[in-house]
Image (cartoon, rainbow over all chains, first blue to last red; front, side, top):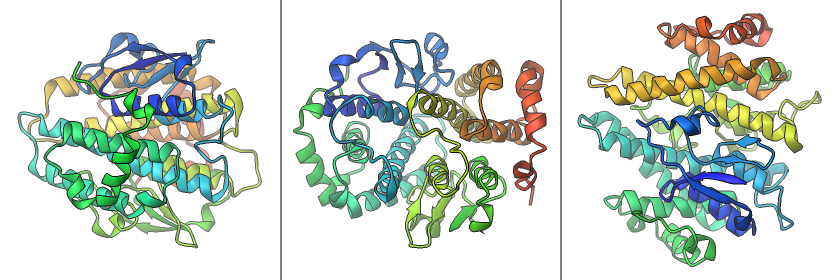
Length: 199
Length: 199
């Protein structure tokens, strides 16, 4: 399998952590594909017209995106316990928590893009920051009850992404339980194998 | 079930079409909840900190989002054929197509927000428009092979959303097959029951 990859995309990191946690990392070949919101990547767009990573190409040419779809596919390839429960209330709880974590990442990417503009809109910055505070409080409220799985991995990536891009948001100050989870999870080989680099 | 709803959100419309197509619409009570990217909705944020609709509250208090998660949940409640295949290549093809359609809608919402700003960034507008053209070409290439289901419904919503917000993108000019699909699908009761209004 070939994964369009970059070392700094949190959505790529989520997929790679999922692959490491399920023992599938060595079946994935990565190719560095750099995208930015304002820079469409012509070659990538032949496989994913939205020019987003991660995008995965299987051996038979099938192309899969987005990061959720790729993780669900990977979850069918290993023999261990499913990391996205297959059905029932456990599934929908996991999917809702994953939607919270991934929607929070989407929000942070929009916030970062807005901040970097020559004319950021103050009301948009304020709205994004209010949602980020609410989302952090929601994560803090339930982090200790989230089992090993896709939502938990996405939250681990989120904590690291906050550190990498939002040093001004002192998230550990308001989220001691999330901070404790992150400090522990960070030691895992899947996190160590996917460290974000400036490279 | 209580659905946070607005008449103009394409993601809400997708959920409502899914509910109509599966015979579940009369089990959903809607409550009008108006959100905008720059206007967080304090009450909604107690259920969904990201302040996004659709958000669904079940009878037992369980809250589900985003639109994909809600549709997958609805797909477990009816007795007809599943509209999101449960497994195998058909599932991942459906999910990839759905990711294309929903990512396209996300892109259009970003494009509309950027256009409406006092200082839109020309390179961002150009990038969004290039991706929209590529995504339209991708939809046109496969629309005729997409079966009845979540991805197809999302593409029907997309066509109407283009009409509603992007009259300047003359999508039918470059997408005759997508236009023919949309003209036919538009007649369905699920589409007629969820018409977008200015109200």
